[in-house]
Length: 260
Image 1 (cartoon, helix red, strand yellow):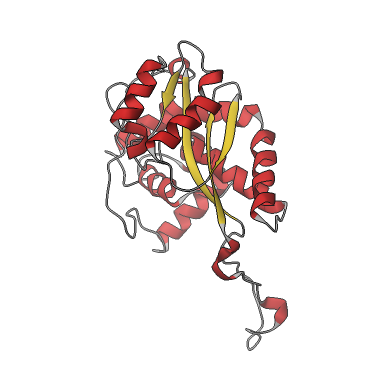
Image 2: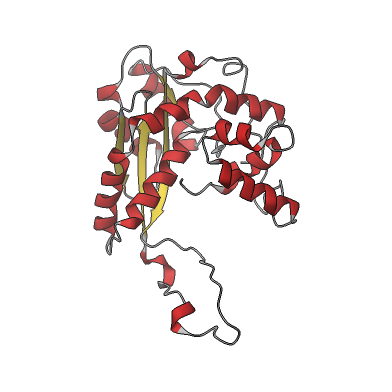
């Protein structure tokens, strides 16, 4: 299973207070083993249900999404940007004899500054349809509109609803006018920085895991690995994420919102 993002882990911790590990695993489309590991760390006092830093934002489901059934969510196209590093910065743990801390057998090679990163934008639909593009530099309103024009609008079908977070480039007056002119229906009032609600975060996690397994050495190779990993994700994996949305929103409401 892909690594659970810290923001989603916060919501899992909150939900564990009112539901079983099996129910939580089903709600967030993660393994029961991952949930049990989080529960144990919580009991040991190694994790908390509050983020360590950052301005708190409430990721509450507004009235439009409250009570939606799976059939309604199937009409929503989930989109987002993601930053992907060339080399993941992860700490690995091992059991070693006393006095062997510097032994090469028990050390991990590190790449200074991570070797760079790329930015991607993508969206997913129920049924497995998806698109991914590489983005250079910051995403301004005009650049975001260009992305939509090239990678989303050609595949847009009447009746679909675009989910986008509240980032300035997504909600600026020029972008709003652009979407209205193109007759794109947008899911309203979706909060910015809310990965606990946006199921595409699970797709980003899986994409990164698989792309890093290909061991790209350059940023262009990383992009090729990301494309391969993204389009190799099974349709069933994406469909299950959509099917988890009613339970996911219910969990957010029961937890009275969450830091994102």
